[in-house]
Length: 116
Image 1 (cartoon, rainbow, N blue to C red):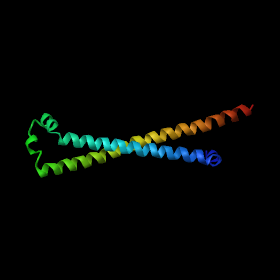
Image 2: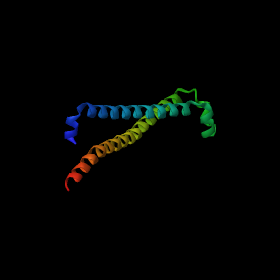
Image 3: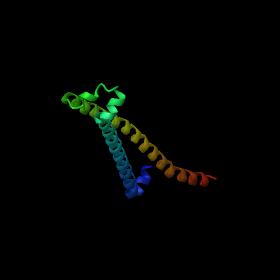
Image 4: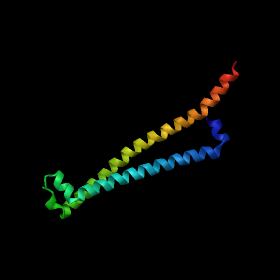
């Protein structure tokens, strides 16, 4: 594998850079979507009334509730970031494994063909 990497450093660099970019964009988008969705859900009076039985709808304007919204949103962001980090790492590992097999199998096939 290292031999192939040293033979084509531009290709190896492009693949690694692309995978890092895809992972970073995926983590950022998933986290941002989770944070925005949580904030929207917690600040929407209709949602609070529907899911909390209307008990929190009157407290929406209070500063204490706003603090809870920001805290819950921050924790939601952390959870979304951790989950997306795990999924994106699995995606990168899978893509690298497939690329490794794409490089190794043709080489192994040629070696097996010359063994006869």
